[in-house]
Image 1: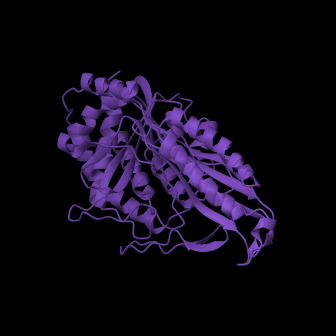
Image 2: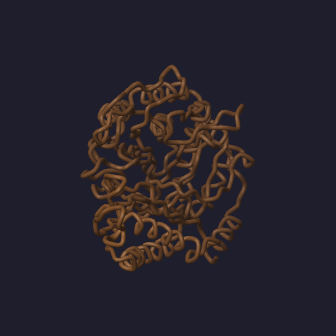
Image 3: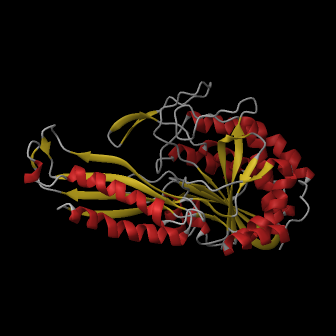
Length: 427
């Protein structure tokens, strides 16, 4: 409650007049719009999976080098970092775009549709930008071009981070924001703040959604191994049924959410997405495996839920004569928008998009590894509208029918360009 009050006070105290976009930034953004769309279509038609974004990275690096940036390649395997130094000394701001695609076969009816196929975890699948990372990459390339022509207005340094493997590296590999940070992407020069955006198919073109504080969830993957005693299905009393134990564990885990978590503060979710057990209808098997995810938006709730899962899983199994263990893998932290930074930069966004088009939103239980950058430096992550104005329906992200209206990309270029200048010049 105290955090929520603090956020409201900060927003009210810092709620100054909306800032109009610099005329030069406005016109240069409009001039680069066609390029941004062309880049986006090229990336869309030639998608690459996490830690395999080789050609994507080459195109990004060439563009930054052509603009005269100081460029570092092969960061966190396939990432690209470009540095633009302004004509005046000042702080360092980072702008981040993710560049990887997904193992999803595209069905959207567009002329630049992806027909790329690959083998992912042993299965032949299509590859597509079913989450919009192609638009993020193209937008940031457009921002790089706009700001490269406005060095005299830049009071400080801009670090452009093109990040691979946001969707998660392949099994057995490191990758994503964690590896970029480990390799020093926020150092030399040291970053003072970071901005990022995500296209959203459910938000109309021209609109921006944001939330101070926790805006996207921490994501944990968990695996539960249940051990019973195999026996004939006709005589269950002679064995220990791991499938029954699994059902009781699933039921018990949900009480952590429904009976132990203060959901009036923030949302939380425990989902079991996969159960594997047994080979035949009349055999009670020896073991079962469950795989699932935990989503939390509050650090203390996150700690408590994981602690209770660790306590509950073996206890339930023991109560039914079996054994069970649970292991966790952290996929993302809470995407936490620094309230002070949000309050400082909100007038810029409202001035560009129009105050009526900037929506204070609720948090989502999706995850984003931009959160790891925000654990090191203050960050602001917001959502850019990509849904066509003539519809109120849109296919979800990570689906074959995912579609983005390209007319929304221009606003992304304008906002990220002006945010950068306003942040650096407000020192």
